[in-house]
Structure formats: structure tokens, C-alpha cells
Length: 181
Image (cartoon, rainbow, N blue to C red; front, side, top):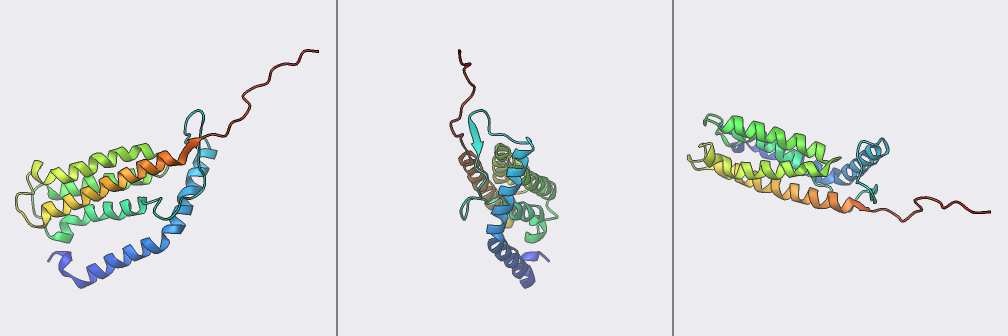
């Protein structure tokens, strides 16, 4: 029996979403501290003449937590919607969902990597027909296409917010001219 037919599955899914929304401000602060620590250790850098804004953004500025939920949804999709017996669907969804999870985690420090999630989302929107498991109709193609659209939107949002966090550095002296006596 597919999980979508169980009441407890939807209660559990709603609980995860509600916890994510409630914890979003703390998540934003945590991500900002993580970026600041990585920059202080020299792991990341915005490039010459730029600096990373260390302050947490406002509400909705850090949506990678949604990418984690989307990645888990993609991995579990074949069992949620009951198409785990369809050839190619499990391997495609598990591999792509795992990629989304890993890239979303790495994208907190290295936003340019979120470009890979754009590719993963595009792949999800086309994979049911390219791999051949979307011809059965029903939830198989709809689940992957919807998740692919969400992953692409989250990746674009992360790329834009990453570019906004890297701002021009404050003007400062770059050297001194020797004084003549």
C-alpha cells in the first residue's frame, strides 16, 4: 500500500513542514554562523574587492532547509506514491534525491554549487520520459516533475541570495607611500 493512502503519513509530513517553518529563523542564524566560521578559517572567500555579509538575512532568505525536505521527498517518492516496482524509477529518484541533499548542504557555504541542483531539477522533470518510467501515467511523472520544479526554484533562489551576500568590500588603504625627510 502506498504511503500517500495513510493518514499518519500526511500528519508526519505536515509536522516536518511545520517544524521547518517554526525553526527557520534559527536555521538562518546557524547558516550565517557557519558561513562566517568558514570565511574566518579561509575555507571560503568572495574574491578580491568583495566581502561576505555575515549577518543572517530576513525571512525567506535561507531556503536550503526546504531543499533538504525536497531531497528526502524525492528519495522516498517511489514508496510514497507506490511506484517502487516501476523499472528505473527507484534508482533515478534515490540517486537524484541524494544529489539534491548533498548539494543543498554544500550550497550553504558554496552557493555556486546550487547550479548542480538546477541540473538535478531539470533531470527530474524529464527523467520519467527519458528513462521510460513515466509512461504509466499517474503519480510517477507528476511527483518527479513537481519536485523538479521545486528544486529548480530553490536552486535559483539560493544562487541569487548567495550573490547578494557577496558585497563590495569597504574602501581601505592598500599601501603607504614612503615619506621623504
